[in-house]
Length: 174
Image (cartoon, rainbow, N blue to C red; front, side):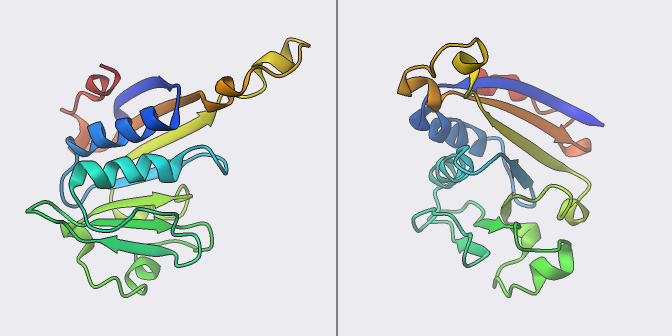
């Protein structure tokens, strides 16, 4: 059962990255953030903002081909583990088999395509669902809208577990 929820509209990649920077302030070591959204929805852009907000080293790029990247902290914050579970069958064992040279409990873990695969890592997690707001003009029988409407995303955040019981995710919409 979700403890914390928030729904936001993001109008540009820059705003998506800014959302990640703001969320980083609410995260702590051991947090699992699961990202769900179609290709091109903005999962990696969001994670890039998280990395900036956490103050980690290295460019945050899609881990599709390497499956996981570790971005060490440049300060006293936690490292960021950015994984792509698209090709993983799931579970803690498979994550640990990646030889990440980092303790998952001491890191912030972000997993793209993780739904149904990595929930067993922890009972407490944050699900971030990113939906592209495309097709609204076409659904009205008109031609697709201007290119800027293709940038609009609807983001739903759902915190699950006691960890998120006292977290006010609505601060992210401010």
